[in-house]
Image 1 (cartoon, rainbow, N blue to C red):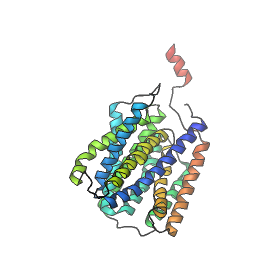
Image 2: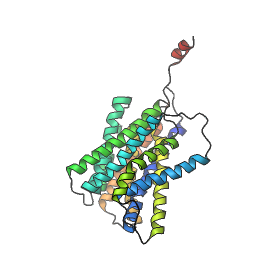
Image 3: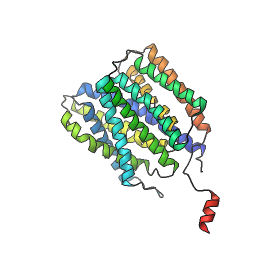
Length: 319
């Protein structure tokens, strides 16, 4: 089994941190969009996917093609795209049914648990005692951060949507890692293109029913916010996410991505005028401590590269 260099592993971790931070800015942009227009969550998600697709196709058109790019099958790319769409759409359904706080805690809280179980079952990845403590600390920080300022009403249907969203997120993360271990992940940019394309196609009919076009007196502001959402927390963030998730342990990926609510909370306090509470501070400290501990452990442990046959097997096959 080949190992990545520490520098490569460090880049993957950095990509994930940037992706998680960018995802957190999407919530602030969505809040501003909802205030400035009558766009609903499904319509916003459609425009996020469609706009991200346009940006990514433009990047693909002008960049140099990798020399030895693995080409996953269309079925493999569509499968990843369906998991991406399930993650996005079910989360918004959970928020609508049971509120932002409960929907976020259940989705992002169940995700690392499902991913840790799946990684151990199908890929032999073990967290160890230290990793389990870090995951527990991250989940506790998430609960304090999101629920500490008031919480929300727990409704079974909303919880069900949130668990479905977590399953989509877990499947997407585990698949990216599984393909990365086998050197079959392909070009992360192409994977992101397919994911946004599948998402846009699947969400279009629901967006039409909800109201596809925004009605607003601030059209310029709405357009710029949509461009930002399509570019930074979608095209950039998901390309970095698929790159990092291919070479970092799946459970570690899921905990690092919990930077998203921390980023959203900081933006809400600094830019949207929300009050800084003790729960926000405590939850942020717990989360960042857990994330930092896992990043430090992952940096000391080179990530697995593509699995290859042992030398003896190769020699035997050549004879």
